Length: 241
Image (cartoon, rainbow, N blue to C red; front, top):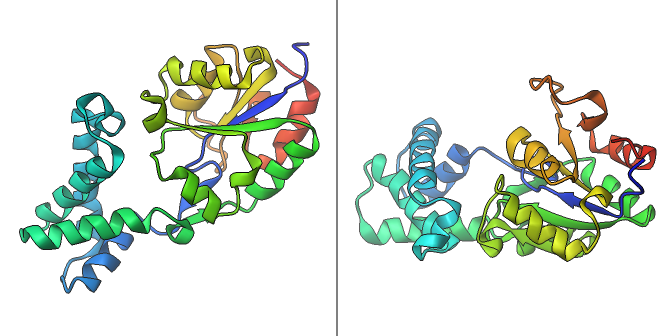
């Protein structure tokens, strides 16, 4: 036995929350308000290209290159619409500003049905909870609007930490905030590399959320898999390695 879990660290996107509609649809709605005639599929394709390009050129919101998340996302949005033929500078500024603000609150985010219940269950077990997420500075407002913020003792975003998962450094920062050994900390996320492997490399008890039951990674044993977050409290009490 490794002793009881005293902290649970959470990933956010696609673990506790998901975007309410596809990026293409959300960008399309904003384009309609601006009087543009574009297709959601066209915008989705352009966004994916712009996003990947910026991730490669300016990783983690370009923090090490003197950028911040708002500047980074502004460039992604402008790049997306520019690919679709929008060249008006003022219009691009408006689109970028509006879309950045649209994702600041709960309107474009949906809480998974099992999120609230598992967070309450963990608290009832006396377990403290924190966030380790490759999110930007808008996270606190999003969680506040979604009614989840009060469950967490701290939020550690990749923008705030200056480093992104799967870099071990962000988990090291989180462990300092927890002030307990890694063996007494669990981390839950949906990404095999960023969440499961990265956390377990430091001795944290990583759990991989696999809502669709794909079981793609055969090296992840059944006791480390969750198809629903409702399974987590029982796992924590079992104290399995």
